[in-house]
Length: 464
Ligand SMILES: Nc1ncnc2c1ncn2[C@@H]1O[C@H](COP(=O)(O)OP(=O)(O)O)[C@@H](O)[C@H]1O
Ligand SMILES: [Mg+2]
Image 1 (cartoon, rainbow, N blue to C red):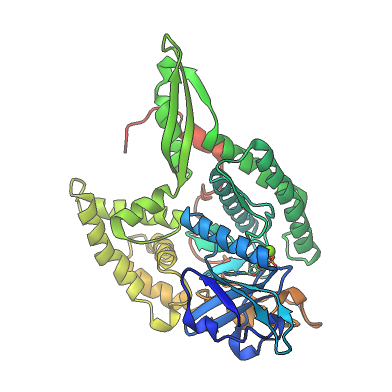
Image 2 (image 1 turned 180 degrees about the vertical axis):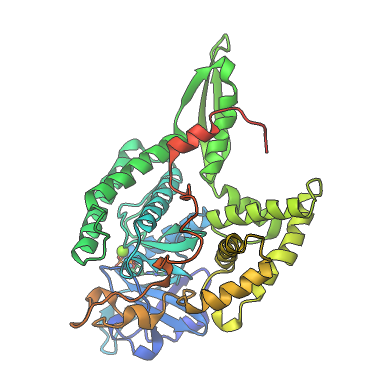
């Protein structure tokens, strides 16, 4: 009899055919979804309305990964959520089968291959790299040594024009109190090797924009990581007359989406030299604030966007001095919810509510520019739904199955590659930028452009 190791057992999982090797599970139990390349047999199963990823893997690895993923969830690192491990599996002849690790399918997540296979702009690649860099820095801040940094082991979710990266494969990971520089370098070396290989692969498959070079992309990731790490943890020394630099440092960290929980400040005897170093920084500066004010659980850039809209709402309704929590509640019920609720039920699987709201704001900006006057939010929502949303693929579970998975040799196992035949890229409305606001908009400052950030925050300014 199989044995289940789980903190939140889902009874419906117990009746799955655990006495059959995963590769032979009947199709009626499986869902065909795009995913990264894997060493092990991985399948997505649907039980009721829930989708789980099941991976067949050796016992000690399954248990190790299960525990690590639980730890990562506990310390609030973006990763897939482990549900359990199935041990003691035997087939009908009594032969042992490998245990299975069960994780919850990460909703609205996109594996890099399905992003690239639809053709991506250079801009998009940059945003994907930034998301990876932030994930790696967050993992390292928490003492997590990944050991297998790669695009295949990362999932991406849309985040208000950018992406948020999630860890999906923790098999080689180790959680320490703190990482040494040598350990971080070890992860970077692995990242370089794996990512270079993956970009070359994309290039060979004609999926990488001709203007992008695998080696340069790998260098870009490494440089941005080092810059971000320096900003998050580096020592800064300055003259006693430049005290504003303490605040500048905190502001830069906030702008990067981090909160400073502990800042170490030391001075020499005369107080003429100040030395500061962030000791504890936590990611999620904006998303925590939005959560506190509205209860909405969003990605960091979505939170930034929604908080800006909330500020705008406060100004428009002339409530600068009103209690923040009350205004936030009004904004939620008068602005956010009406827009989100105006989406017809059958289209709700296309975008998460916060991402949808962000898209409607973008669309409103575009309509208002065109009309030469501000367009009403509900009108913008209607226009967005009828002109854009209806043609976007469903991403709640994943990118529309037919669009991305036809042509595969085995739709349940993308790592088996494509069946022979035409390999024309499916059309991707997301990367089709003929219309919409992004064209004439200023280039978004979403990149980890630390130099620009320093320039912006280096002067003492009045608090806004
Ligand atoms: N919980 C999950 N949600 C979404 N996709 C998943 C999940 N678990 C695995 N996948 C997909 O399956 C792929 C392989 O999983 P992974 O754990 O990396 O297996 P392996 O250890 O064999 O490399 C991943 O790249 C990812 O695309
Ligand atoms: Mg993997």
